[in-house]
Every structure is written in C-alpha cells, then in structure tokens.
Length: 445
Ligand SMILES: Nc1ncnc2c1ncn2[C@@H]1O[C@H](COP(=O)(O)OP(=O)(O)OP(=O)(O)O)[C@@H](O)[C@H]1O
Ligand SMILES: [Mg+2]
Image 1 (cartoon, rainbow, N blue to C red):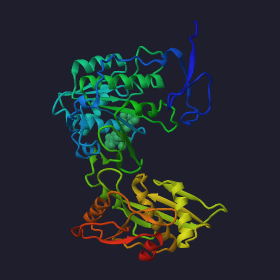
Image 2: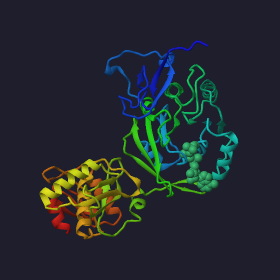
Image 3: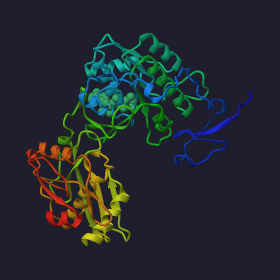
Image 4: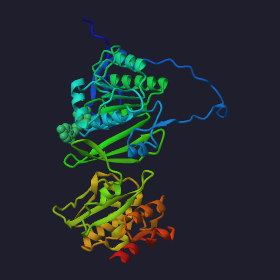
C-alpha cells in the first residue's frame, strides 16, 4: 500500500512539523508529536452565509438563557446556558464529569428532550449510574455512539434542549483517517458539534479528558473553538469538587461553583466561603483573604510555613499562589520591614485547592509569612487584602466593598485594607487602612 504524505502534529496545540520533535516550539509541551496524514490539515468547513454590515446596522443579540437546574452552576455561567453555547468541561479521570452532566441532564429533562451522547460508557453503565443518582425521565435520551456523523444525525432528529458529548476524545469523524483522540479528530469533532449547536440553537456540554501524561489531544486546541471552558477540579481524597470558569464568551471568568460528592452524586455547596474557611487552622501563619476573581467574592485561607532552611539554598514552594510573586514579596519584606527569610524555607498554600492569581492577595501572603516567622497569630476576626508594590506600598484593589461585605456576612470584625478603601458602616467591619506593608505588620503584630 502506498503511504501518503504525513506530518507530525503537536497533540497539545496543533503545531505541525515535517519531522518529529521532542518539545513543541509553539506551546512548549514535551513528547507531544504524533504522525498524522498530511491531507487532514483541512477541517471540513460548514458553509454559512454571512452579511457584511456597518456596526450600527447589526441588531443586538439577545441571549436567551436556560437553567442547568443548579443555581451555583447557573451563576458561574453568568446566569445559565445561552442557546447554542458550547461549554467544554475538562477534568482528570474520575473527578465526576459524567456524574455532574448526567445530573444536569436529569434536571433539565423536566423541560424538554435532552440528549446524552456517550462514547465512553455503554447505555447500561449510564443507566446504572442514573438509577444510583435517582434520575429517571422519558425525556433523557442516552445514545452510546462514537461516529460523529451518526451523532450529528441524532442531534438533528431529536433537536434536544441540551446536548452532552462525553467525551470529545472518543468520538471520531469517518471522513478523517487519523484515530479518535488525535488532534485532527478532536478539532474536527469540536468544530462540527459547535457549528451544529449554533445552527440549531442547542446548548451543549463537551467533556474533555486530560490524562496525567497529557498525551491525549490537549484541550488547548479546543479552548479556541468552544464558548466556555470549565475546569472541574478537586483533591482526590476529599469530597469537594470545584468547577472553575476559565473562559466564557457569555459571562465573566474566575467564577466558581462548589459541589460535594456523595453516594447520591454531586450536591451543590451554596456557601463556598463557609466551605473554604470551615477547617481553618487558628494558628500562626494562617490569614483569611476575601478573594474576588469572579462576581461573587469567596473567603479563602492563606497559609504559610517558615522554618529554618534544610539545605544551603532555601526553598520557596507555593500551592495556589505564584512562586515568583512570593520571592518578590520576600525581597520587599526584607528591604522594607527588615524581615529576613534568607536562611528559611518558605511555604505558602491556599487551602481548599483554589488558585489565586489576583495581586490583591499579596498583603495576605506577606502577613501570613510574617505571622509564621514570628510565631504570632493574626487575630481570628480579621481579614487582609491589598496589592503590594516593590517599594512596600500597599495599593488599592477592585471590588473592595464586595470583599468586605462577604467578610462581614461571616462574622469578621476587622479588615486590614489599602488606605483610601471605604465601606458603608452597616457592614459592621472596622477598617484598618494601611499605605505600607510595614504599617500592616505593626498593626497586627
Ligand atoms: N457507588 C458509588 N458511590 C459513591 N460514589 C461513587 C460511586 N461510584 C462512583 N462514585 C464517584 O463518582 C466518581 C466517578 O465519577 P465520573 O464517572 O462521573 O467521573 P468522570 O470524571 O466522568 O471520569 P472519567 O474521566 O473516567 O469518565 C468516582 O470518583 C466516585 O467518587
Ligand atoms: Mg466520564
């Protein structure tokens, strides 16, 4: 048999090369190149007529939203699913993606037909899960199928009010030669399902598998195609699962929805703040920080541990916080507050598995480090937030009032905040405004 031309394709980002490479020059992923037929470069385009009009002539799009049946999930999505919206749910094996989506299907099947396409599990397996979760409905249709063309046909004939595709890596198009899960197939499937959903106004959830090795076609190529990307995470040995919105064309990112995994499936946790600070260590090194990356602030516990260094090069390790930012804060603390950590290992952890990206956490991290180093506890009724600059100055942050409100709701009485922060007196929180990091340390210790 004559072998056609082939190319090596990065399975993470789709970068093409004529020869195999150990590391992708585009996305930096190691060992991600796979040989694929050259002819598959082209995605089969779906024809669509487009109008060319000046901006004023276009009518505004009105998003019609439908509920997923879970209030916290709706809120994270910006008020529910938009018709035709395609959401990618990515998460490690066994985290509960299929469980969550089956439950969402169960809830939404009350209002219309729902189609659950499964390439991973048989109808019987899904039925078993549905019975365990107490889901039954005439409207919930299960279709264990892996051929994209058949899935498209089913979607067209059922016209569901919600479509679930579990998972994008198991479905393949017969028009392409490469195997299911390859980057060409994954892109093709995601692209065609998205086009179909837009055409029929069907909202959809697509499951994206990630393996520890990252060897399966990466969600990176998918992220550009879909409207929203949700990451389902959790610590394997706890019951809690956090769904994070990392991309959303119809709402803000940084939103979260917290669930608890139990015998009867996933149960929403309506008050994430309560969950994140419930097991708070009332000890030196622990600080409560009102985090506001999404529209609803959540209280998080920032922990630090400072101990004499074990080796000549002291370690700086973080979980949920940027390690470079920590090094910078330690330098500022040394220069501006004469707090030396050169001979100490410094660890920082955001409890509950959350990742904090906003600089508003700087002051809380600095305070946690100093608290551990000095072995002095931060008063348990106090929250801390503010961005720290290189000269040790504390800068204002956005959503200050919402952060204080959330802290007030959970009984916190005082807040160390950037100077100039204002809050209405009815919040019942005493403000301790600071303009420099050393001022905050003097106030607290
Ligand atoms: N009988 C059971 N009782 C309680 N919890 C269960 C039971 N069976 C499974 N689970 C929970 O459901 C989880 C698996 O969920 P699910 O199959 O939805 O994950 P997934 O993310 O879809 O995984 P995969 O990527 O393998 O498809 C398990 O990790 C476990 O916590
Ligand atoms: Mg699954």
